[in-house]
Image 1: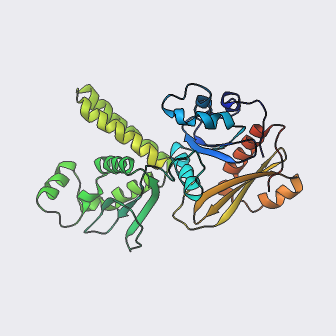
Image 2: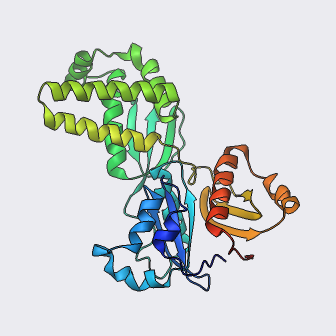
Image 3: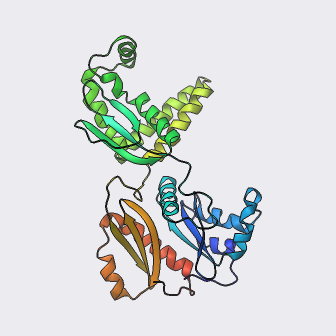
Length: 315
């Protein structure tokens, strides 16, 4: 287990990347003290070496930190999911609650003629003409993202048989049932993280925000900014939690250190590391799906960098 001597959080943090991820602290006996997530791993871990302010209850823990391990994630959203998965499986002593405050939700895109639209749901129910995206963390963020998608791509106004207010809103938006298929395809492209669709949608929403600001409609511009941030959250890379109930082990290897990520029921639930030779590592690496290769390799290199000269074999 990692046991660098005479090393505090600030010194350990210097080896971390500045992007999002999850970190865990271990004591000199290799026991996990705490698991946390960060938008900036280096800055967050370094903060434990300064004035803890509203985290004074962690002072005793900080004195026991002998090592830091980390997983660099592709987005803050992915880091939030990974932290939740790890804490739901095992709660270290210094963590207060399992999971997190964000609520898991899905977006349901309904393509049926009489009920087309985008809705937030908490469970997936398979139906003809309905597609689910997610899961996502954060009901508030996802509602804002859904609001942005409806604002720019109002599928619900392309339903058959609209009456009263719905028909008038559709007229004002310039939408009718003939637009339904194109609107559905545009929404799906954004939620599928098609890069061109995401970029185009973001630019359109940004122009709407800037126009509102020029017209001094600052409250509306602020709402649009919140929607822009929410859409970025929803479309950001996130693979540590999947709706597919797959079970697999993902491996990365660097400088004699093998890192194993355990995925159970579609969730990355744990990661471990141990010393091994290249021949042994190749057997494990061969079973790692291509979609996980870059993630696993990047984090194996990070693990080796953090371990330095003081990594001992771990079972």
